Image 1 (cartoon, rainbow, N blue to C red):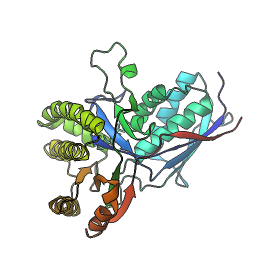
Image 2 (image 1 turned 90 degrees about the vertical axis):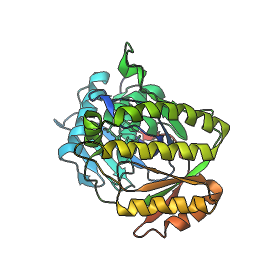
Image 3 (image 1 turned 60 degrees about the vertical axis):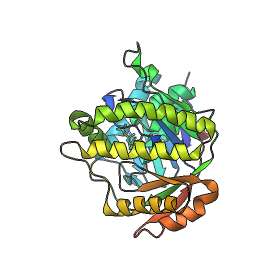
Length: 333
Ligand code: 2P0
């Protein structure tokens, strides 16, 4: 099969309700445990990939500026994998535009590598199979495997003794979820984070005595989370998600040296969420590799939750709902 030489893809970020924190294989990006997320309807990434037979290196433009250093290296390594699989040699011209602040703990690498995987597979004529695309996106960034799909999504870690571990680790939609929730995104700091999640995970796995216990607890959380989604039980979903996220932060704070993403502003936001619950509003917090807080609540309560979260000093609040999976937008013949 030959590539269509150019493709444009759009993907949205996802927020994990059961977190991915720690790899058992760095090269293949195989996680220590399954994770489960909700894809958002805000902050999409749009990425175009065009093959350039005359070029001797990939060119990447991110948000209008030429990419260099580590971001460029990661994308080139990813394109090398696509070329190897497609048995093609042409270099690519990549243009990627985020609508989310890079490095703000809002998973721009998830939407970024999901869009890049889909666009690169389109341009180089690789697979269109969604599960295969999620495996491919995983190689760019673990959480990207989940952004291939809309709504609630589970990413299987795959059995440790699987014959083909790469094949065994993929994401797929949770088709029996009976929940339509909002995630109120509370941006407290939009600057780049102090420690990358990749390095933070590495350090946690290598040095945190709490990590094995969290992985074990996370497996049980996932089983309970799936049941809660099937039952449409928002309260259970929220409680499990908050517990799982706070446990993840505890594991990294117990690493040497500690990784601490929580700030005073995060603590104020978590207090505001507890305050909402004390007032009888169903609201539960989750946090990722940064100070920002995301609040899960019923769609009907989203405006009230957003209003309360805006009282946290320095916050910028965006209400997100369930968003769509990654799509190819246009494709030159
Ligand atoms: C998640 N995070 O499940 C977790 C929770 C952040 C906290 O996946 O090293 O950018 O590229 O596989 O996917 C962020 O880490 O890490 C992440 P790599 P990624 O959403």
